[in-house]
Every structure is written in C-alpha cells, then in structure tokens.
Image: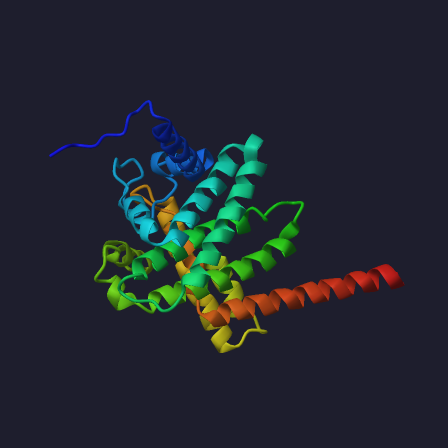
Length: 290
C-alpha cells in the first residue's frame, strides 16, 4: 500500500497552511482567553456552595465550563462575568472590561432567548447555572449604582428591576427541580436549601422588625412578607459575622432577593414610588410657594 504525503514545500501545501492559520487566528480571541484564564485562576470569582475558597478544585466552574461547551449562552455569560470582575480589579482598564462585559452578556441573553424551547433533563443544569451567574452579574451592576452621584433613588429603582428579572429567570430554572435534584447540581441545591432554612440567631435586624410591627400603614399580609425577608436577612448576617462559617458566607447576598414573596417586591416598589412622589411634591411646593 502506497502512502500519499503532501510535500511540505509545495505551493499547494503552503496555501493550505495559510488558510488554516488564518482560520485559526480568527477563531482565537486573546481577550476572551484572558477572561477564561481569569475564571480558572481566581478562586473567589465563582463559589456557589460551601466549598472553601482556597480549595484547589472548583467543581462549580468545572461543571460550568463543561456545560458551556454544549450551551453557548452559558459560556458567554461566564466570560461576561469574568470581564465584569476584571473591571473592578483593574480600574485603569475598567471601560474596556465593562464594554466586554456588556457585549458578552447581551450575546448570552440573545442566544438564550433564541434557543429557548422548554426546560428538561438535557438543559436544566445549564439553565440554572446561567440564571445564577447572570444573577450575580446583575447584582454587581446594581450595587455599582450605590454611589453618592447616582443617589439612593437610582439604586432602589435598579435594585427592584434586578430582583424582578433575577426571580423570573430563576423561577423558570426551578420548574425542573426534580430533574435538577438528579443532576450534578444536587449538592449545590441541597446545601443552599440547608443554608436558607437556618433559624436566625443574631439581633442585627431587631430594630427593623420592631418598625415593621409598629407600622400602622402596613396590613397583616404586608407585615408577614416583610418579616419573612427580614428573617432571611438575619440568617445572612449570621453567616457573614460567624467565625465558624466555612466557604461562601455571602451566599445570602444573591439568594435573598429570590426568597421573599413576589408581593414583597411589588410592595417595596410601590412604597418607594409613593415616597418619591411625596418628596417630589413637597420639593415643588417648597420651591414654588416658600
């Protein structure tokens, strides 16, 4: 049997190599590689469970990257979150990283919307990871609005929008909870459920509870909703301030907005809008007549 080999010095072979090299260069984006390297090397960037941040392995990231190859919207969101984190770590290049973050996140959401059919065993892991990482990203953007320049009004408006969007995507993902509990995410979901079901221990929120109880403008259902979210808030404070807490002690930060009933978000938004209108009217009144 005669083997046929291409002469490495031939014109035909040079043309093949030229086309191959050009395609290779077009497929590889070094900016994306930087984001991927940051994902892999920064141990604190993606911790979704109780695992200690100094662990060598990161099962959440490993699973996310594997699922991202099958579900591009997840990979784009992973890279977007990495860019958002680098914008914070490297303020001198924040504009460039923020541009990457917005572009990649927009692409991720676009692919997700275009690919959406229904949630099932084959895509439930990717969708839940996507909703979780997107939620982290949206929360980061929201907290960035908490500046003296933007003011509390801008922050509260953005925060309510974040809660509504994050809860919507997460609700879709959790419709497949039975399938998720049979997936590789079962340890994460079980640990999160255990974390959020803890009984509050501290008294950091005691004054807030008293104010809610004494509020004459709140009905029984409103007070019940407020007390529920305050309970979760105290559990979060307990974890942050506990010296015995292992791993992700800030888990409640991103989970808290999804734990309260939708009625609380609607109530909070309405109360804030009423407060804005009241202050606006008083401002106009004071300016025009006094």
